[in-house]
Length: 438
Image (cartoon, rainbow, N blue to C red; front, side, top):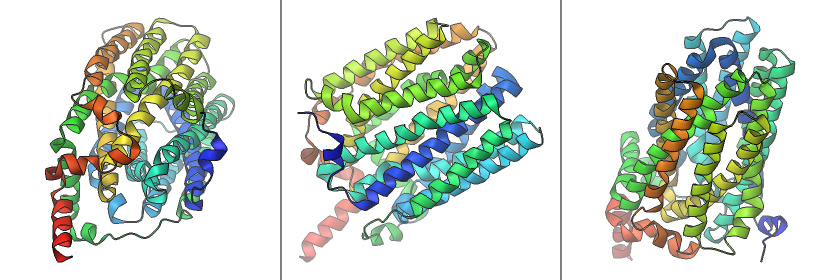
């Protein structure tokens, strides 16, 4: 039976509704900001600057994520999210000021955007795991689906807004609008009410210990270790195709900034459709492992088409399909991987997933920059599309992944702790002492 949007919203706490609003505003700002900043760099600095801009800013987030991830477990996540968004707003103001004075230096642009990357390193781990504190485990699948949908609404509108502003107005106005949207999103995040929980065991850990715990958990669980390693290769192929090469390709085709916004909006629209309807409908007819396999193979085919075509409307269609397929892989894997980790460690463990993506986001654009100096853009795009397809079979054959995904939501809750207690020694020790005292 198809689960309606109204039914999935029913019974969720007010704090989660505010989280959805904050997600919409954050997605709107990020979408507008990505298009505005990327098009400004491509238009003024060219393909070389775009490749290094992508690689260097991803490197900043890569370094920042392990350092900032424990904050989401140490402090209330709503405050961490709000502070991060406020920092990103300062980055937007700096870029708008540079554009106002027609001042473009790649180093200064990278430095300003690096502040934003540090800010999102604060926000993303907490944003990925905050739903588990607001809703019961049985409703987490609905909550994550709705959260992805609210993010997609913002991401659907944001790129269109950013592309339209870049096409019709001065760059400083588009970048200034990005900063203003972030200010509103920060205020919205502060209003999210999180139920109090015991953080004494977290406060007792040193900051470095918390970083080490997040990395140790991922490494000591074989499924997560393999997922991260092969996921790194997949993200190294995926990120350049959607972040680095797409703006360059559209610019070389002589299309205005609106088309970059339209492609980003199409992907977000597809993600919205997939999160709200298609993924749930698909899972009524096939298992999670089969749905994941279908989505990953279809996604590889989509990027082959994008690499081989110069037709803007076909590219637009492919990015819409990409969003739908991406929602399937994200919702199927993320819900289980979030529930399998004990609540006190979810922000740090979620940060490692983001760290893997950002490592790919650094390696991929750097490789793209090297290849662009030797090959044509079409050849580089095709290389990454084939590279992405080659990573699909190993991801589908991860040892134990199909059994893991076949568990229901109650069975998978804290499953990693039961299967691999050695990865959670602080928790296991604390639980043992508590049982002995009782």
